[in-house]
Length: 297
Image (tube, rainbow, N blue to C red; front, side):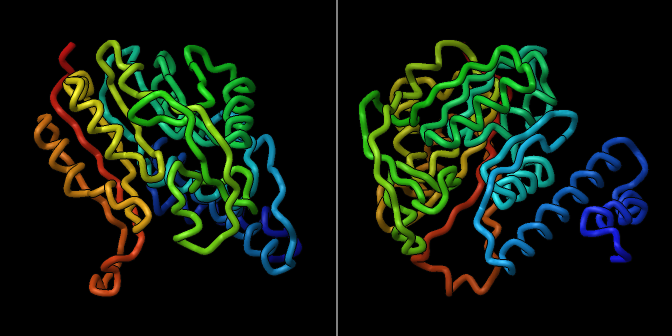
């Protein structure tokens, strides 16, 4: 690394990465994101080798916005899914779109959507107390307007439920209303009570984009929206679907039928490599992107 350290080595990759992505502005920006992603992953690997504990990171500049995160690992994962994979790329929308973000975590999705739609109105929901602190800080330090934050879980009805999170990761990306963390990996899990809000109570006008990343509560939410005739008010939707044995009523086939009957065209991205026979009955997730021509008020 010629005495530069990891950060200097990553910077030295600039020319090659820019050439890979092209010289237009979007390609240059993706190149910067890739260099930052490599840097964060190298930091993570070094910390793992040295046996260091996770610690917060502050003030990382991503597309002109400052980001705080509970750990390098969390930031690297979110940078990859939100900015590099562009899971929440929605294409065209109204000048001032209404966006509902269920499962905002530390707010990377909010920052990404505000970067592309500065005048968007965003309702953001996150029940994890630690993640919500970062979400609040990231929205505040970037002076984002028209973003309303709710420290609540989204469900099919308003009530109090048990919320499960990773005991070793306060800002756990897999925190859930189901006990999927313990089943999935045998981790130590913290249980706490959280307020849930019915998503149906928040849809009172056409919604340009609905993001549902609620770690296992997808079907109950979509069924409630269907039963109340509210799916017709949504133009585009991203759903991160989660399957696990502790939540057998969250079925992919039922979710796809709900979307199909409501007039959505749906793209499925499983990200699961073969052999598929080894994956039967195993916990997994996949992304669904559903769209229709326009919402009906």
